[in-house]
Image (spheres, each protein chain N blue to C red):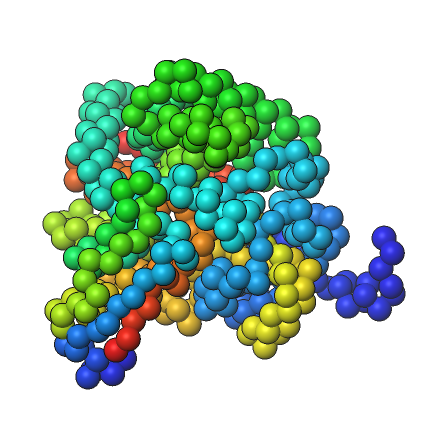
Length: 411
Length: 73
């Protein structure tokens, strides 16, 4: 370290990031982060490589920075606050993707992915999502108790839906679920991360090549068509497809698993949702669960490419920015009594999908899945209860996406 | 929010270059906005929504992650 003594003194009391949630309040953002947010909407934290980027905890500042063109996602830039050693060590090997490109390059990638996820296309999928959900619940009701909500409902629903959309054979789900899981380890070493990422990448390259030869009506065939047209390389297509596959099942699955737990812990809110016939109320309940749980942990990573004055501070060009969704979604200025799950509040501006040009590509699909799964489960198994003591529920403190590893329930 | 704004008609414009196809506009105001079939880019169906559509149009503009919807009151 070549830090001067002065810098060392200033940074001595800078808190370490990421922070973990408390075992005694597992739905809440990490408590020190909430305290930081009460003092200021942004402050410095220290990350794994010793650097001290800005952590954004305020809702308004988060929204402003997410949509500020002086804020870049290009992880090759100096000062970019990488997640971990694996991400830094592969920065020049990974093809550019929708996650790591700015401006026009990003728009080009994004539009290649957007076709299956428009609001109306997703609306047209609702019947199919309902059917997959009902089949999973039939199986739960016909099987032994306790049943694991994660294995029986939370994982299979989004996995079946995204497999169908992408044209990925569902028979391969154990393979890609496993590798997605390895790839999402929060503190991945370079070696572990590389192994998971490479296997999935190879799998997608094979699939893209298959779809070039033999296209059908699915999203990987759309990407394959772009390869044939010379717009992108096979590697780029595979990178984009991998992103859709992982983001398309892992995140929604985590949200369903921990969302069901939150519903079981808030029976009066669960009753409101169960008894509602109003699509707007049901939709807002899913937004409120997203706000309350903010499962994407580890922060959205950015770097400033110009000086930015915001929230009484100056973020200098070249300084890292970490926007953590959880404290921003629990900012009392935006959501009074943020620690209450309350389906009657307007949760429309929740940041669970992020905001700005990089906001989740699959958000409309996720919304439809969450709305259908929570409402259907509460209605079909009204006596659903947790089959283990609450403090024995295994939480995913060590993954990039928070959730529960398993959720044994009875009825 | 001033009570007088409710019930007034609004003028809308969209910036297709900025649009990132989130679908938030159609979700909030499906009679005013649509998305292009191929890439989900915003299409304006009504550029002067009537008083009954003004509130949902404002919601759509506020929800747009790309700030691609401009409203003139």
